[in-house]
Amino acid sequence: MPNIEKIIHDFGRTQEEVGSRIPTHYPSLKFPKSLLPYKKEEIISALDKAIEINRDDSHTIELLNAGRVFLEGFVDDQEAYNSNHQLLGQEGYWEAIRRKNII
Image 1 (tube, rainbow, N blue to C red):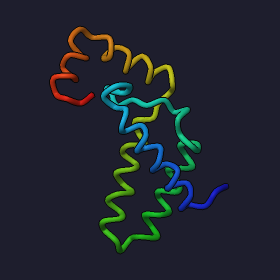
Image 2: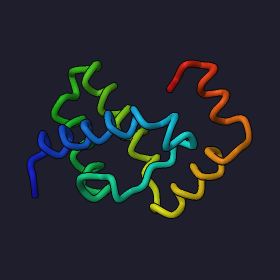
Image 3: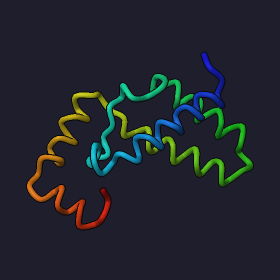
Image 4: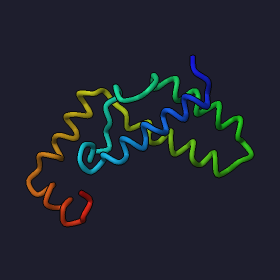
């Protein structure tokens, strides 16, 4: 198993990539679990261990906890597809995104 730092780093890259695609791919904030670089349980374990290691660093703990919250959005691929497709297919969705200059 990769070390805690590598797991968190790789998950952080996934967060950045997925986060940048929220308006165009994941507006429901449901993400395909298959995009995760490790099993969800491994990432949770790494985050928990990092929180324990950094227990005196409130800023780092805040970031790690934010990662845990983001991780909750990773669900079964079909569930993510259905949830996002429903929003992406709504009349006016793309026009609203364009008006806000998101894309």
